[in-house]
Every structure is written in C-alpha cells, then in structure tokens.
Length: 500
Image (cartoon, rainbow, N blue to C red; front, side):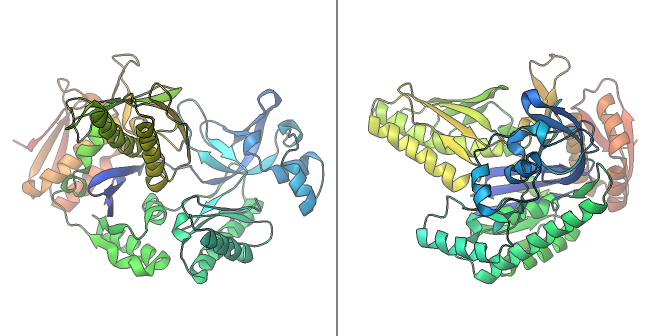
C-alpha cells in the first residue's frame, strides 16, 4: 500500500510517495521559485534558425525558450506553411508525413501561443511546444491534436474500446486525449466531468491569449501538492498525510472534488517529530544521493550519471546463495531489476540508461530478469521507457523519458573547491535543513532567546531569502531568534543554542 506525505513549511513544500514505507518518489517546491513546466505563455519569436529547425521564443524569462520543429503541431504548422485557413480530414492524414520547415511557419516578431514542456536547465532555456496538453485525473486533454490514445497499462481490450468510444463522444471536434490508467472501470459521468473541466480550462487560455501582452503567462498548472495527489491517487493509496492544517483543508476539498469516495484518506499529522523524520524519508533521501545502493540480499547497485547516459552496475557483494552460483546471480539480478526501477524514479533519471547485470549462463534466467524488469517498469513507473533484450555480456540498454531535474540537480550544486569533479549540498538545501532543525528544537526553547550560528554563505542566504521563515518560527514558538555569522563554520555546519 502507498502513502502520500505532504510536508508544508514557510520556505518549502516537500511531497513523498511511500510504498510499504520505501520511498518511491520525492517532489520539492521552493516558495521562492516559479514552476514553469506545463505553463502557457504568449510568446514572441525572437530568432528562427532554419539550420537546426528551431525557433527561439521570448516568454519573459531570463533565457528565451526554444521550439524545435518536432514540437510544432503538424496540422497548424502545415496550414501556416501553405497559407491555408483550414484542412479537411483527408488532408490532415496526409500532413503526418509531409516535410516541415520552421522558417516557413514562423517569422521573427510573430506572436505565438506556447507551452513549457521542460524546465530551463543549466544554460538552456525552457523547452517549448505547440502540441498542447492539459492533464486531468482520468485523461490528458490534447486540445489541438485530434487523436485518442489509451494507456498501455489498461490491458483489457473491451475496456480500451469502451473508454475510447466514451471519450470520443465527449470531446469537442478537433480535440484529442490520452486515456490514463486511472480511468479503467470508471463511470461515464466521472470521465465526462473531467473532460468538461479541461475543455473549459482550454477555452479560458484561448480567451486570455487574445488580450494578453507579449511574454505574459496565461496559465500555470495547479499547486504541486494537488498535482501529486491528482496524478497518484488510486485504490493503492492508503492515506494522504499532511502536516499543516491550512493545507489539510485545501487537500481535503480538492480530493472531495475529484474523488469524493477517497476523501477519508486525507489525515492530519501533528509534529513533532517532523513528518518526514517520523516516516524515515529524510534518511532515504540522503541515501538516494549516494552512488551505492545496498540490496537486501547483500548485493549492491552502483549508479553513476554522465551527460550522455546513466550506468547501473550490479554486484553480488557478500550474498553467496544457498544452492549454487547461478542461483545466487539470478536472485541478485531479480532484486537489482526491481530496485533499479525504484532508483530511476526516485532520482528522476532519464535518457539513455545501461544496466550491467551480473552475467548469467542460463538463457532462461536472462529472460526471467528481462521480464521482471519490464513488468516492474510497466507496473511501477508512469514514464515511458523502451528496453532492449539482455546482451550476451549481461547488459540491458534502455531509454526513459526525461522530466525536469534529477534529484542530484535539485539538491546538490557543483563544488567550488573541487572545480566540478564532485558535488556538495546546495546552500538552499543546507538552509532548509537549518530551518527544519530549528523548528524541531524550538518546542524545547519556548519563550526563550535562541542564537543560531552559521557559516557566511548560509547566514547570507537565510537573512536575504528566508528571513520571513525566521519571523514565522519566532511567532509560532514565541521565541526571539538571533542569527550569528561565524567565520570558523563551514556552509553545512551550524549551532543552535540558548542565548547567554
């Protein structure tokens, strides 16, 4: 069974999904940052580069977003390219294989409706698309792509047909949808309600676009807490546990609206100890930042990522098995396949992935490991992946859809002392740790004066970025908190003590 934990603080929202108390997914949202993914903008074409079939679009961010020809809606793109007003159904089918040229679709200075498909990362701006999507609980609406797809996890052929017909009859002409796994077995009224809400949202985006200024944000996805609940709430969820009463009320109303039969699962957790500490989440996050992952059998995984790919190396370790070497290797590889899927999700690793399983002599054992990997990916991972058969050297090559930053990119930063050869915790993450530790200890220091001694960079971050969080802690626990900078303390070291 699964649990969804929502930890809300003044400085940050953290959400964890546990299965049998093992961390499966973790989400972070700093209240100082803006989440761009799935947002809609009224953009302006700033540059068109025919050589790489890419247009750069000003959306009012630090760097222009980039729109590649592969992300341009083919029907509207072809219509613009040929100077037509519209296409009939026969012509639409012919467009699929027609060559496209971005320089004939967009001109510099032209305004265009775009959606962010991937957040900016490093020196790259946001990745943009005109193949729009609006996720709901049961379907993902594609307002300008008239196709209907069904989740591969819905295996029953009759159910797939029923859902397709149901959605097709409820969608306005010219729109399409992806039918999500959560729609399986659902009543027509539930799915129709979801479609009506998403269509209404799309109409409001179209209306805002007409009157918006260039680079204006027209729509942003719902709060991350609601997103995670919407995307993960199913019959396997045992409880949704929230540590903040205001947030509890909002989550309860949201669940009551989208799945009233599951509203009873929303529960309040009263701290201390802190929610994530109580369920061992913080410890599991720390483990997920390490290269080595221990397996229950005594074996281990070594996970290393480069810009080009991620490599997962499986080792037997101290596990020797009860029968023979082949039995030992098979059991370790089966456990490693399941743990690898969990780690890919937890660390948010995408792109090209190579798994170096321990070499097996038996072809049937190789097939068992491959089948178990595929089955686990299908059942436990919502992102699309493609897996190739195990090679004679015991290697599996696979790809997994990228989405946002990896866990390391979110929580770590390049070390300025090792000049890129290693990573350390980011100042933001260290500062949040300080605030969480302060919150944990304030209960024992009520109505007293407390001094928090910090290294220079941590002191500067908290005083400049999170001073309201300090004020909030003072108000909540009736303390007076003094921040003190100490040159002899490193970024990650701090001292919380009663003032003398």
